[in-house]
Picture 1 (spheres, rainbow, N blue to C red):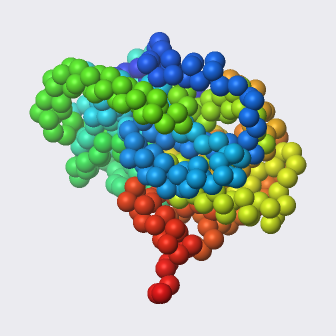
Picture 2: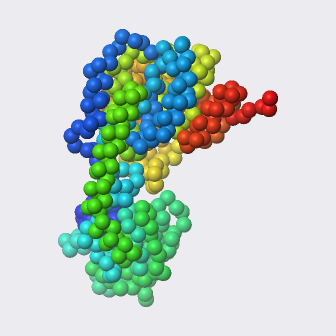
Picture 3: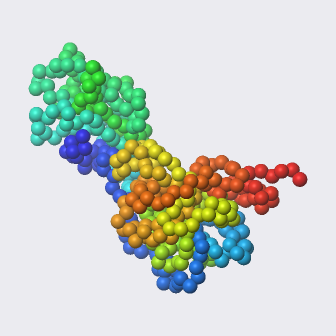
Length: 466
């Protein structure tokens, strides 16, 4: 299937038809050159020595614009840490931030998770368009088992008007019944279908046969697949569809306003750079890594931080968490002592096993071929030993990054097989449990409330009446 899809002129599909074959997933764009934040990073690398040894380095993944979350952390658990004369000497906390903001405005990206420009130019409006077509030099002897499905992604809302099927009928019509079905990606039930039969062949356009269907809108970022099957259930060659662009006037207006939107966005990025430099100079707790700060680049952010840690710091363990997580460092230390966690090559976290690979949406995975990921720890918090950090840092240029930092970590760790210590108190979902080490996905106000209860009663989940 994949070889044949490459034969169908993907450049036309991506640019002219505004569809994106899921086989072609380029790496996230990287901003060329060094931004203002790089100077801060270089200063940190050159000035920070290894004279002080830390038991634990805490890396907090943070987005550039999450200043409020960082402020809450500095006023809650990080403030508590610095006021503790023992813990403050044992723990180093750093926020991990991409040095470059994405230069493409959010409204003009293919999706909100990457930095790829939505490349729509000169759209064809108010007329029907073939989504997929076969070139004139396509072999007339193409067999049915060479193409079994076509996968696609919609970058702007379209209206499907007809379903079609490739069928080499040699001008004699259909010799058997064929049903073409369009599926929403990862769904078992077809959105709609069309049946082709000897007495009802439909209309031939180029080398595909089409039949009209009830008009159906596929929204932006919608993903689908077009297999077809014989009536007796044997899967065969793939189909295609004809569509029109939905709300073409709105699209033209959006494209017309794009240049000014880009100018405004670049100006905002310069302001953001200045604010981040000021924040870093005041608190001295940010590590800027040479990455465009988007969700798809979070695994690379993490690898860069591992390298920074090894190059600049003497430490025993590394704790990774996110800026929207509640963390109780004292509970982490007590739990480590209770479980007697020590030694090399260990990974302490709450592990997900046999987690199915998503092929659509925010967690879309196009590069990892297996249906399930290796064991990986929840991103709200985990601890790894120093030797693992050194291995990740030394191999950071060679390790492949996947859709999320937590699953990427699981895939990387599968190569070295660390000793895994399971701990349910590293919570995977937004909930509150007495004695929890971490809990994710909180707003700044919610984090303040949790810590207020923690300081008042010793338990962030409840306060008994006094």
